[in-house]
View 1: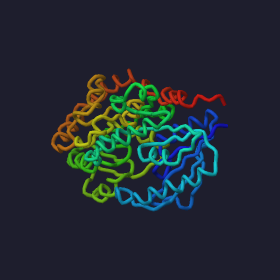
View 2 (view 1 turned 60 degrees about the vertical axis):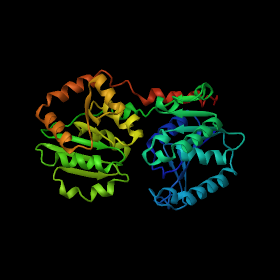
View 3 (view 1 turned 90 degrees about the vertical axis):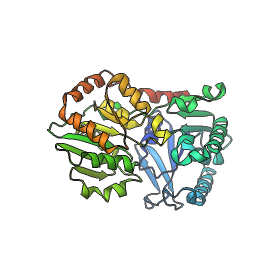
View 4 (view 1 turned 180 degrees about the vertical axis):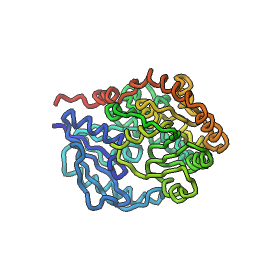
Length: 367
């Protein structure tokens, strides 16, 4: 049995994208073990785990999430700890998720293993890293050259790659497992339910939604998920009579959350290029659950919804624009029914079960 080591720099409880890839490989007969950095020691009493056949091994060099460069010593300690662990075992593939995972993987790679750089994002376009754009581009390009395979989620990520690098690049976008959502049946009530479902990063945009809808009748806002903006939003929720903030949810609950959602709110800061060019999994979850969307004005998602007529675009910085849009939808519910009819035409076009087969271009061993 071929051994796959995956490296992630989160606590893996589990990381949904990574877990879907790992589970697919387990189902194909690979022995998959995820090495993860639980930097805040949330699972200090669970250093090893097994989820859906995927082995999990956590490492605990302490660091506070969101503190940037101050985590560097703990990050290097994490690399040293996984290097020590890997020196004692045999493995065939080293599958590294994101840039920090790839740096760690390159540092501990064995001569016999294949190095895979799984690029979940477009790193040099992340807002907080724009000033280091050229340095990050050099690092990313170096790791791409040293990798045996590259996985990307967006065509923009490989736009400037040479033919040699493109030839070893595999497309694996953030599509949902359709089987997880096929049973979704929408709740019937008179209230217009607008939900954000996912990692809660954008305080300003979500607060503006809450502010815009606070005085509207028959409108209810739900924010599901945790993230760096969760605590701050949660601390002000009492000021908003029609807002519910629930925090972290089990991914298996996702279909239930969509059943209570009339519109999925997928609005991010316009100042973050990463968000303006990205296709988050929640966008495709909305499609599979026949949920119209509100997206960021000027983003690639606006072009998509315009082409298929499945939603609306708004400036997330403008409380008045958000309020006007929600008021219009609330007074003209038939527009949602029209959007749903259009979603039905593409509902099953973005399936993880189909696109994940692209992994076989990398993991093509006869088992």
